[in-house]
Length: 178
Image 1: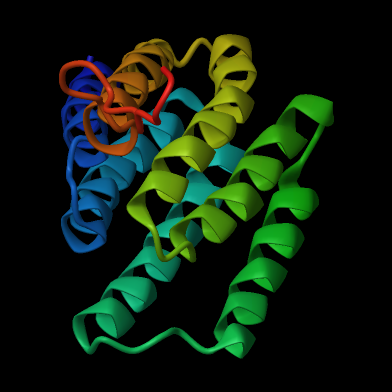
Image 2: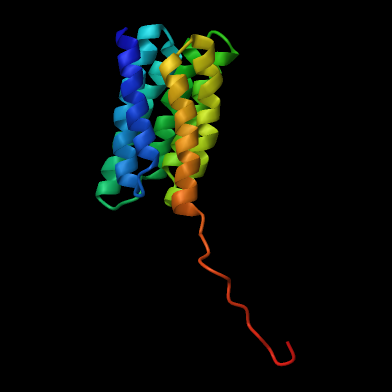
């Protein structure tokens, strides 16, 4: 029962995160949502996902710190995050399905490093597509529901913030003889 509660909390935070226009707020809500999903995954026995999620939360905190200081995170730090993701993920992996969170984590790390929010939103779709089969396999109902809602919310966010809407009839240059 408590796994479901943490899963529901994770959904709320992750869906809210993708609707944020600015990266700082996005990362803060991602951290809270991911902590809830880490607890959920641990409680249902999906340990690879929980371990990878924990490393990503620490990576997000580091990125948040640099973002707050208005500085770019040194590339060397990214390597120091990639190594534990690979080592921990691959060391507890029992099957191919356990590799999916590792791939998702590496993509998410790349996603978080993006400067433009529109790139973060677009890459978030790809990351989520790696988590869906993992959550189906482990019966992680709330993270799976969260993934689906997150995908829909991300598309809405892309439409809302990233795609330019033209107002009225576009102006064309008229020349003599037209």
